[in-house]
Length: 199
Image (cartoon, rainbow, N blue to C red; front, side, top):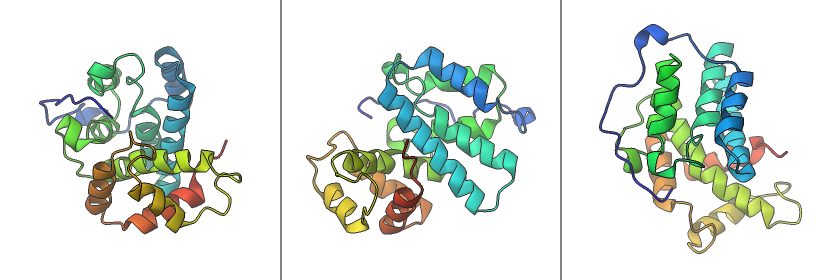
């Protein structure tokens, strides 16, 4: 994430829209309209998948799992066409569609250093935690003959320390996100490698 756009707001969506979330099909229609970069679409699918799996393992309801999924699936939807408006554009779109404010807040806070919005809820923090780290881990899988199969935490951490590998991935954000979520880097890596979307 190379650009910075401080959002200058601390309220997202409306409380009256809690319980209102678009279908997965509608979310994909939005992605098809906004995103042409297949790698970016795959990244968003990965993060959405991780968010849903994590929410399911926490025992959250089907609806809660769905909004966690949507937050992950749509968090970078405006990056392809409007990088200078990331993530203001997707926030405005979701607010205009009267989407659950928790989805919008999670997206707004997935890069506090970039957008100036603090991740407060567990959903906010896990979106931030999965975003950059899953990108680095996927880049590592692409250079391995067997992809994710047999991937070990120590191998990922070696790439994490190598600043020239996947140089666009912010190590600062990964460390910060891990601390905010209260989950050790090793544990996050293990969760991502075990539950990552592989197709």
